[in-house]
Image (tube, rainbow, N blue to C red; front, side, top):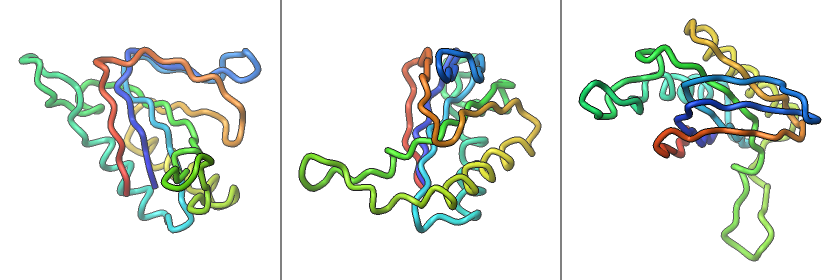
Length: 145
């Protein structure tokens, strides 16, 4: 399971030019699910994101978590994170989970985050989405579990 996370001042998802979901200060998570992923991967990844200290404290040091700053999280399914660009010029998606498995783990990941009493929003699985964000920093990390 892969997550590209970005610390944001705000982020939103539009589908067919209509606002679907949005957050203010927090984390935008692009989530990729691979064939080998299980619920344990989703739990570990969610725990890591919730505890990751990527927000600045009073000394301008990255020392605070999403919970510490009472931030919000927007989760967007991102199939292309599972793409392998090592050979040739066309990405291979052989490692990507099939849609049925991927949607189950995507929804499970969201439910794990929601169980921690912070505001969670999400995109729509398999939809064409316009994702808008204001990256804070910029601060961006790739996490694999």
